[in-house]
Image 1 (tube, rainbow, N blue to C red):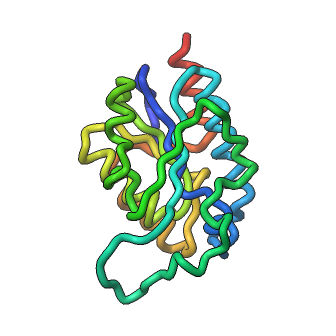
Image 2 (cartoon, rainbow, N blue to C red):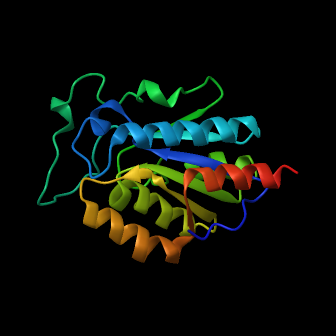
Length: 187
């Protein structure tokens, strides 16, 4: 882990920790991922920093070999899991693509608040989390990835993102390291 600093204006982005996705088989226990994401959210709120919950509500247009039928999902499929303890002041962004910045207004929301850095957690490491981190990096945000507050359907895909992709997009850290960085920056 190599996270060194959090900017004064950092936001937490939590990707797809919603009922329908958390219920799927994952490489790591999703209960632990949710607990760590909730810990991060509480720490960001304690420092008056934005918390953004992103949920997926459909798929991008276009053909793919693995299509997903979102029409057949249960009605609460895209609701945040209760364990996140979402608060009234949190931001909610709905998306239809893997990355949280495409056609969602997320960049504008962050820029309007002077955000220069994002910390990212969620599911799936190699899909929504990685896509969002790539987009954030390309948009000029500093990126920190909470690698113990994320998981994937495949352990290999998770490890590939954490070990090979994330170091090129930003810095990685465990939840408690990020919480400690928040406390350090407040001094």
